[in-house]
Each structure stands twice: as C-alpha cells, then as structure tokens.
Image (tube, rainbow, N blue to C red; front, side):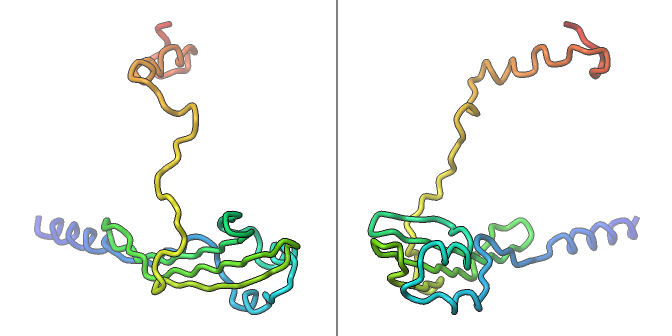
Length: 147
C-alpha cells in the first residue's frame, strides 16, 4: 500500500512541471536589422511575412507581436516577455518609422481580449436538448436506432 501511495505522489509531483510557451510572431533578429526607412510595403511582407495585426487609424501600420509565457502546473500563465515591432508607412506605402516596444513599456496595443463567437454557434436551450435527435439512423449506431 505504501508503494502505491509513494508512486501516486511521485506522479503528481512530476505533473506539476513548468514550461515556457511562445505565442504570436516568431522574430528573427537578422530580419529586423534589414528593415530600413524607405522600403516598400511588399518588401516588408516578403521579409517579415504577414503581420500579427494592422491598423489604418493613424496612418498605415503593421504590428508584429510576440509573447513568452511561463506556465506552471494548472496555474494561470504569466507573461514574462513581450516584443512589439510597429512599422509605419507613409502615403506612398514606404516605411516611414520603425518602433520597438517590450513588456517594460507597458500595454501599447489597445486590443480587446473578448472572445469572438462565430455566427451560427449560439444555440437555445431547446436546440441544445434536441441536438442529437435523429442523428443515429443506421444499424451500426450505438444500441441500434429507435427512429
């Protein structure tokens, strides 16, 4: 009995491991150094790829966003590193300004963290209750079919 308890404790302790999780854009420092003012938008897309998000509110801008999170067991992940590269374009679609922000700079991108629910996925209580009605119509269904 003691061996089983010790084995369960060891398994529980080993499941509480930690890891670093990368999210968003994966930066290559060499590519960032190649960006200079005056480059055209298509050159940036070829060099850096698609941006994480874009904005046209205060001029055309590309945002490349990368985060690193520390995860431990079942606890909420903690953000330990953030890098945001903002590339601004002028009216001729040439690079006008390049800005780099980190976690120390605070939240510079005003984004909504609300979840977007795709249309057609919201169901009523009645739809939820009657969801499986009529789905099992073949003899191979579990316990056969009653319809």
